Image (cartoon, rainbow, N blue to C red; front, side):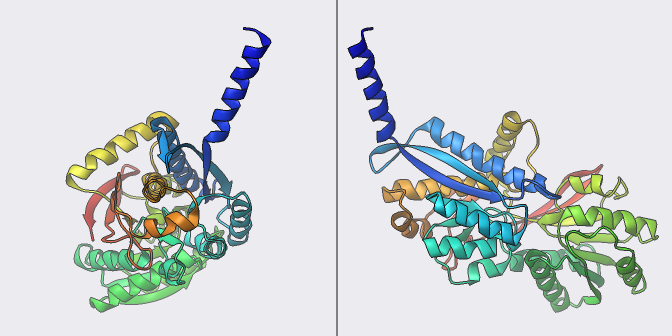
Length: 375
């Protein structure tokens, strides 16, 4: 090939690259720290979606585009989350998937809203996130009102727990979930016999457990993450308190068994995950789980499929709008109807998912065991 031919080929390649628009999707979660396994899970799910879109070849407004994932670590800290959010806005992302926890999602959402960037959380459940009046805020999982109601019904109806001690970790997620659970429990004739709180960095729960033990509860409800609940279970065992524990999706990880030092008994812990599929829809979810394990060599924790669907839903809105510009595709996203691996996705006027499902689990042999899927 002569020099002129090489030059022409280079120019052609350069022209093709410049013609192909790059669409940046942001993602932020705690990929370091005590709940990094949750954060890496959602990041992996988002990455799988990006890879699937690029393998398929997507055109937006008649032009082929290439999707990129701009992944950041917010360490589960609200201050770091806002710094990360500003960094992603400055990087001119076209859309945001995240953050992982309610405590990071809520402060970061103000920054995305100010920049007009659509944000879909695959895991944040605090009602406050979508009650700020931000037209840019969406979620693909049920919120704490729905979670708390389902857990309250199960505690009373199936676990026959009338006297319950509640503990929260002072995060937006933990406090919100405990509030909704207590409301549901009491509306059905249950009693909150003790109210305690800790924090998500605590390691010593002996004083709390001693006070709770004196109230003789049927059940301990914990609003927080498995990184805190696991050691709490171990110390409950050490102090001769073998009652059951219940919580939200923060407890729904196999890691809780390891973190309890192996002291968690079969059936001792019941947790609820925001989301879940039944019947024919299970085939798509099972395939996703198999593909995820093949790609990353590990099992799905909880929210990877919701992060996957968040990216896919956002991309579909761009395709339907014929533009990846936030202001153009945002109105389309608000009215989207998308069939995801986690089920049908459509948002209400606040940005909450319509007809969100709840999945209840317990644990056997240290592994999650399905109890039921409900609404």
